[in-house]
Image: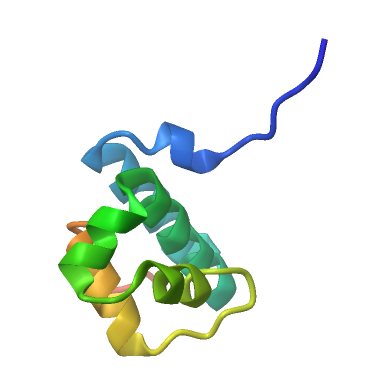
Length: 94
């Protein structure tokens, strides 16, 4: 019996799951983790749909959201809006 490769995008099938995943990565991850998470979410929603909503080409999206990429903040914000996400800041407890 073979095993299949785990792909988190397969489990990001509703807005609540997407929000929980992204919030967990924002809380515990680093820059690269956040970029990868946004890429997973974009893949789950569909790169064609994200491309249409952001005005960025699919190849540009794949490149910007790939391992080791350092996309511009404007690109990240466009993708976040396209995936119906937003960044919120809350006070940190000491």
